[in-house]
Image 1 (cartoon, one colour):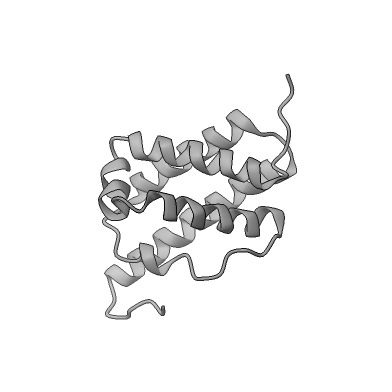
Image 2 (tube, rainbow, N blue to C red):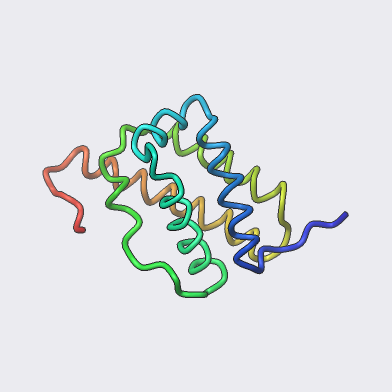
Length: 130
């Protein structure tokens, strides 16, 4: 059976739910995410639905700035590489098409930008704008 592209909020929810289930179970990423999010997973998942719905489907339901909550995370390139492996694997398992490729491309750009910014703030006295 051929995979369909990402086209609905339900597709976004499947992608986000599956991905974050894998994050929570991952030995490297799980302790970081579970430690910070704690019992607020439902709230976090709702925010991620809105974020990816806005980015991929151009339905503008997300407001905010995604970087500041991540600015002080104790992460390295290995964490982002692991995040990307899980993200790409989840996208490829469930979807194929232009939006699926866009989701992977945007994940790559986000991971690259976040790592650069995290390194910058670790090595400088500047603080991210909220």
